Length: 115
Image 1 (cartoon, rainbow, N blue to C red):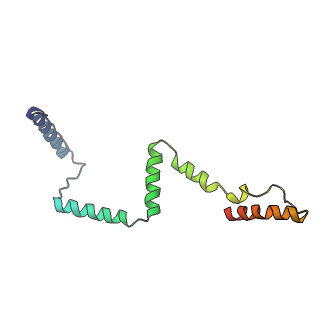
Image 2: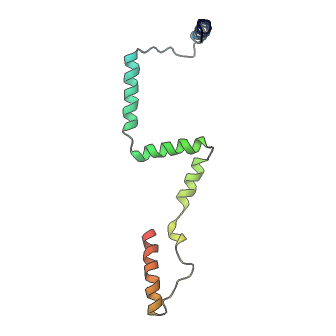
Image 3: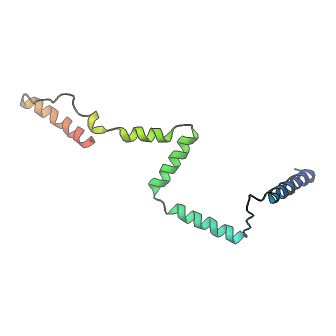
């Protein structure tokens, strides 16, 4: 960029600053660099005190939300899922003999471990 471009940019910035000063709705806040640094450190310390699960949840929400997914709806659907009913047999299975019982026992252990 040449000096002409910077001069134009400076002119636009001064005009914008004059327009915002004229608006009484906006409060005028002035901070020096040390105050900005202290505010940044306070914000950083607040975010570092969150657990890693909270941080992971926030990052996941940001990622999925940026892709246009309805996070609230997905969360509700996931909470409504129940593994207990998924692995339950529709009809009670009766053991008829020892061989069948020995075959089903390891499978039942796996199902109980998953639930």
